[in-house]
Length: 139
Image (cartoon, one colour):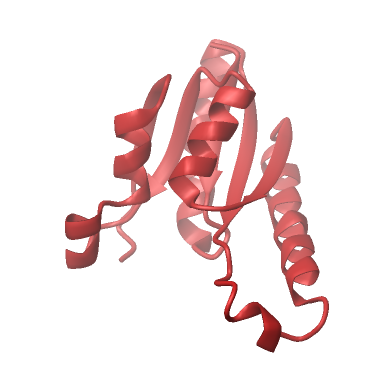
């Protein structure tokens, strides 16, 4: 195992640290590098015209800055920020970098997630590699 992709949601702060720390423990035993990924969900096209000029670029830059801080804090090898549907982007990026393991944080699902499916559920079902889901007590 050489590459571990950690898919995190920077808007859910406390669960990310625990998830990254757990991944670092796994990486040490396998001599693997840890790569952080955050996916920005796309803003609907009908909303974009009413947004302030430069908002999308600023939003992307802020996400990149936040994930870089996390990577520096935890000593991760690399970071990426992508835009799109989270499960699809996580799976695509994992294949692109030839990840050996995907680690992601999951919270206690609500009714909507049972009906529609969560990101973690979609990733587990479709991943080309092993997936480790860190259960968070956050709602």
